[in-house]
Image 1: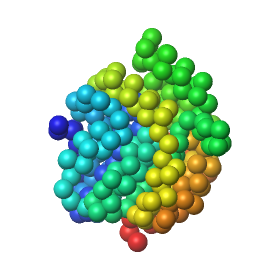
Image 2: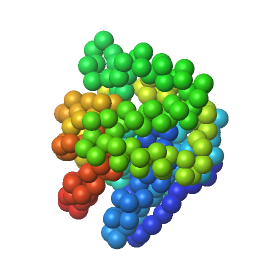
Image 3: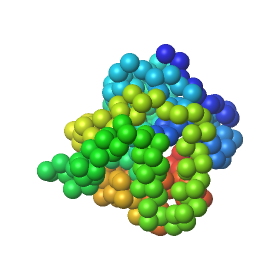
Amino acid sequence: MSLHIEVTGNGEPLVLLHGWGMHGGIWRDLAAQFSQNFEVHCVDLPGYGESLPIAEYTLDSVVECLAAQFDQVITLCGWSLGGQIAMHWAMCEPEKVKRMVLVTSTPCFAERVDWEFGMARATLHQFSVELEKNYKATLRRFLALQVRGSEGERELLSEMREKLFIRGEPDMDALRGGLNILRDADLRDVVRKIKQPTLVIAGERDKLTLSGASYYLAQKLQNARVAEIKGAAHAPFLSHPKIFNEHLKNFLYE
């Protein structure tokens, strides 16, 4: 299938993958900053924004859909759920994915007996229940969790809510499938096999993906380093764009 992808600039392809409930337009300011040196691809994941949904929403099916859009070597930047998709893609196509940036992402979003950096399963279950009752209210609540504790929290929440539906409403099956990935995916064994150079960006105040998960990734990935942004929660590229872009430039221009 064909995905909606906004492409700006020229140079090495930089592919930006958004998180659950959002769309590729969330990257617009970042894309403007990097389009002078990169060909920036802001992707609407299947079922989000202007991209059509897919029949089955799994990490395998999403990566298969994405991989079909690119026949060149790329750099991936994935935020939250987009980071999990990026890691799976890097594992499936190591010859295509040159390097990665993982933004407030985690190998395992939900809590496990042997995983202390996950969200409570009861909280994820409640999101699933509320999604069926009122998905718009559920998405707005999820945004509030993303910005909680961040510097400029109120202004950031207003900005994200304003952008939430500017590309239309997401497909319900895509929302359900994304939550299922967040609930079930455990990539801890996968990340140990990923060799691509990786920058892991954490938010000091992130309540969704604790910064400990980012340090875990930096330790377990074969070639990675972590940058923690002080005062930031789950969306540091929006709350602290200047320092976020500095970290990204230092990594991409090496």
